[in-house]
Amino acid sequence: MASIVQFIKESYEEMTQKVTWPTWGELQSSAVLVLVASMIIAVVIFAMDKGSTFVLDTFYKSLSN
Image (cartoon, rainbow, N blue to C red; front, side, top):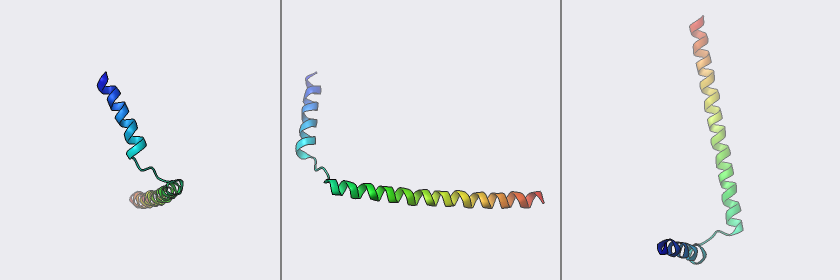
């Protein structure tokens, strides 16, 4: 039990004394960067999906003729 209490004390000390937390501006910049990157990845995946659907539809239609 003593080791658990010691662990909690050390964790609290590290989180309050040793961790460098980002400023509000840095946090906002990072959030915007993640949002933009997510949107770009979503558009790329959407384009790949539509492209592969078009190719497969064209292929299957050519087989049925």
